[in-house]
Image (tube, rainbow, N blue to C red; front, side):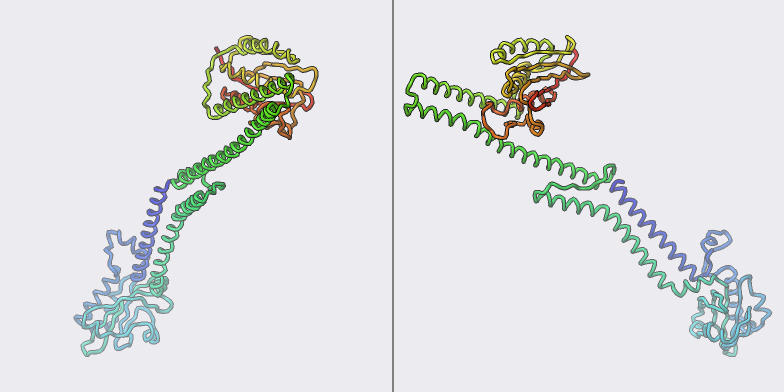
Length: 488
């Protein structure tokens, strides 16, 4: 439910409650005065014009009033008074606090206790009095008219109508009912306002606390929200939570990059320091005259040259890896037949690897027309890195590497298998990380920068493929990478 609709419904409910309570209050007011629970229905009747008196009461009262003005002594005539009585209307006539006529039996005690006394002021102002009275456990609404008989005796006429017993209760407790209804209205409005405000203010306070935590650098928390709600506050909370997640991801990535930067500097320092130390040592040996024969001098210079080339190769790989990491290396994709490409590469590498005592074989299960879209130079670099890495860890006299091609519905799978020493299971998930070497010590016995597999992974990722490895310790290692097939 939207916030606008929620407030609209709140205000409508407040108005509705107010109207209902007002109607209830009005009903109690008129009910306490008239004692007629059906007065609302009678109000809209064509035969009834609403007054505080019913037609029967009004007729009887006007008759006795006229009689009290013209000939008060006639009010002592029971036959005349009885003729004025209407259905449901009772009359009591009193002279000097003594009842001279009553429609029903009434004792003097009731007269003294329940019936109000003569009021001379009402005779002067020609007014009458209305109220409720209880006689013999029944409640009556009455009209009281005070007058003087010709001999100046006090006279009073009561026109009574039987009413509901609840009227008396309402009449007595009316002030308390009024206060109760007023408090009820305040409580209901307050409750409705609290419920609506809580649904709005509580999420806002939650967002405020969340913003404060973020300001203090804490983003590792979550803000609960309803996923399917159209409430504006909930949508704001949802957006805030998405912002927090992205900020957390950005901070975590920044921390990760910082750790990688430190690791990169440490690795570069280590891998550059070793050959530089060797070069300095051999140069000092030449300067100190240790290489005092042509053979030693040649050996020293050859070592210096080798170390310098290793440093140059490391710097090239670092430069390539950095550019790949920053996506600054241009890729020139072209559609090639992967079978033809791999066969040509196999023939090219066979002679070079045979000189190193490595047997290279190529197998394919692909159809002759299997096409992929690749940068051929970058793909050649991937395969060379993988083969070079395999050769480093060859520990058998019979050294073999196999290139295999297979496919599924959407990809071509390239597999490079060697019969080297294998990779420990705990190290297998990390071999494509930069500068990672599977051996515990970072010795350079096997050579290399530790970037070959990382570079291969970045190139394959840029082709939209994936790369992974399996290995059996002391037996073989297989490196796989996939390329998406295309139709030509």
